[in-house]
Amino acid sequence: MKFGMNMLLWTSDVTEEHFPILDDLKAWGYDGVELPVFDMQLDKFKKVGAKLDSLKLARTAVTVCTTDANPISPEASIRTAGLARLKMAIDMCAAAGVTHLCGPIHSALGDFTGQGATADEWKYGKEILAQAADHAKANNVMLVCEYLNRFECYFLNCAADCARFCREVNHPNLKMMYDTFHAGIEEKNIVTAIKGCADQMVHFHISENDRSTPGEGNVDWPTTFRTLKEIKYDGWLMVEAFGLALPALAAATKIWRKMFPTEAYLAQHALAFMKKGMGV
Image (cartoon, rainbow, N blue to C red; front, side):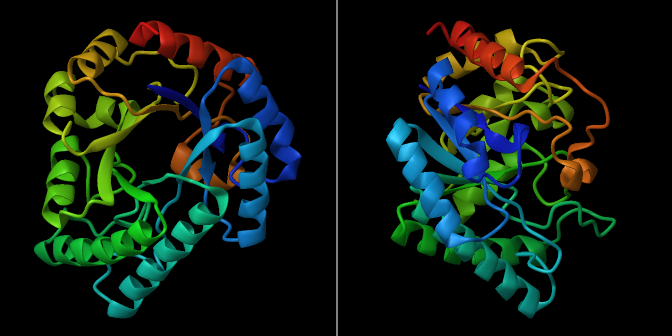
């Protein structure tokens, strides 16, 4: 079991300015961090990777798809751009020594058609993600699909659909993740959801219902932790929380008010909470 912290609590662009935060996370006892991959600058990711190497902190990453680079677009040129963007994100991961590239890598964030996923979109998504997974395999990176709630995307909204998508692509470098925030909106039964995707799940976001300090909200943590133990999950538990540091992402994160005393408070309490919940 590995415990990590998503850097989106502080920034969407980790640079040398944030190295003291990485020092703190190491001192607090985290095993690794999750890096945002939005700004594709190879030299920057090499520097961040070197810093993490020096701290012996492991790392995963998170990215999104955009409207003009959407893997499920009806326009072939936009799907091609989506594949190119995913490949570029994978290259950033390779430069930083990232093992997992997570997120809604299947479709454009916040882009809606007014209906659910179509058969053509499902086909396009599988085709693009299979090619992206080939590039990921060549760079020793695992692609990890994240399903989002219905208010953020329409393509993959629940664990069962995300697992089915990954099974149909059937690529060793494409799996899925579970996020307690999205699950709290979309899943009818936590146990059924987690156990139903266990064969495809390689990553897990610990995220409270209000996106702040895990354990201080309404997520059913006892059931969540118990089920993870029952399936013998042994991957990352990665805290994903958002504050007011990301005005550019406010439309997606929907954070308008301060939810916690300080980022340090959240990070330290989250780690203790996860370890207690998993009996570590």
